[in-house]
Image (cartoon, rainbow, N blue to C red; front, side):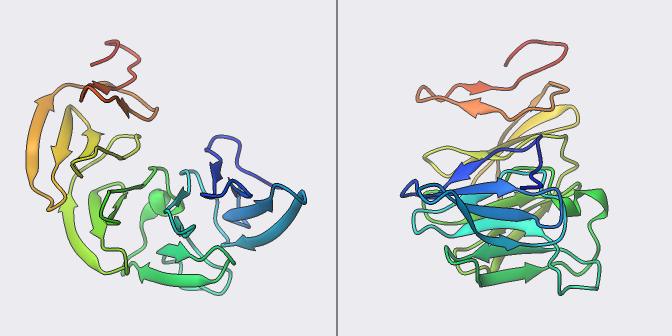
Length: 199
């Protein structure tokens, strides 16, 4: 498979396809669970973030493609058959986070949220940029609640943004964590930490 061992596997909504992050190339492997065969491969860079899948089976990743020689990554929406639905091409190279260290997320309205080393981006379901906010994010994933608020950690703080990109709240707290946070149905957030337990 040439998969990437430090990332997360993701299933399609019907459970028939398993999406495996690749160590590059490819970036992503679509595996047919029933037939135990590879359906398609996509991309040329290592994918260190988990691919996300919407209710229609479209997959979202940050990657280079084999055909792209500009050294500029793009955020891709890939159809279930492996063809490109849309892509957002970044103007500048994204340094080491071009390979996607942060897990993206999607809200209840189909808007997508992606982090790079110094910014958080929001795209609508058709791939149009909604907003961009400058944040120096620590190694974590983005998560979303049922009210479409986005949560993530930066160096020294934990931040909640609305779906409009506005700050809902900010807590000065340094979890120094490398793992994904979690949220439960009681609106409690859990941030793994090497030094201070959980918030």
